[in-house]
Length: 433
Image 1: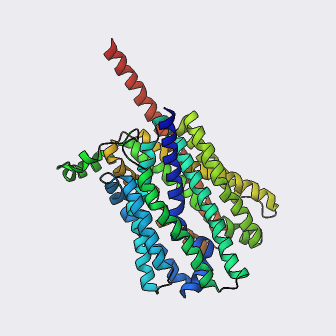
Image 2 (image 1 turned 90 degrees about the vertical axis):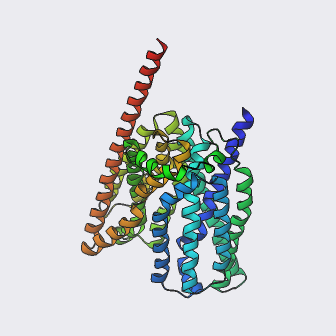
Image 3 (image 1 turned 30 degrees about the vertical axis):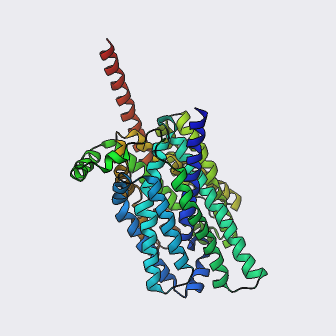
């Protein structure tokens, strides 16, 4: 028992490290945008085009990603993703032209979207027992954030060393940062392949039998129909959608505090960095609470509290001291990352066979991560049409209302789960007597 326990947590640790390593290079702009523009000789608009294409590729590959995860072992898909992303990173380090950059970002869209995302979620779902779902997803989110933060810290140190100590120019120094990220992915590719073996996962299905099934393609559309008619699947999607919207609001906190509360860029940045470090704490605590108590109740409560605190943040007096803003944003961060840590655990409440679980993940992802498409446009429109605090107020209030809707969806899911459990008990009693 202890060996199996240790093996499962070893695999979870590998999933955490893998998930924390594949995205930082793809989203290098998060910490090094100005350095990227200088090194590649491109404009901010051109860089934005690359990321817009990346977002579109994610959306259109969610369902194919799930379909693929049901037919190919997650460890193979994730190893391939790391290898492909790393090789493209080597090309990226040569500072190619804009057209070549578009090809690289398209390739990253395939690596991180089509062959990675659903495989990661499915591997985590299959690895965790039913009473461990919230904990495992909480640890995944918390650990992933910690890995990304550590890598970012190392990357900044590398850049500073080559720029300030050795006196290299920005392109040369940034290249060393890219090498670091690439090396991590290429090393992890074989490690994930050999450690994330399929044969001893507690809920793993017979992949070989699935691949040999001659009627699999004919059942594909029937499977989609069976999934989209389940209320629980849509409620799961709504929980993720509204939780992800609360996370999206955090992208505007820094600009809001600078423009409306007259905070300096350093102070606003300090507050948002503190919020980022809440990821590990919030996701871990939420994960353990979700399994100790009822995960839908915990998720709903966090969504409701997150929405209320977002409204408090929105309507704070302009003369409020920075410490009050810091405290509010820090608690929002705890709740926000707690929500992200466990909202995928609701998938286990949906009656989905393991062999089509990837397909279910793809469908839920389209719903849940659709804010990537419409929230940037909504934010830009509102701030343009209603300049100043009014635009931010409408934007934040809209997202806060969504958070309350998410809380209701989580409660509704809990009610359905309870009803099913009672029916199962009655059925068993009638069969026994």
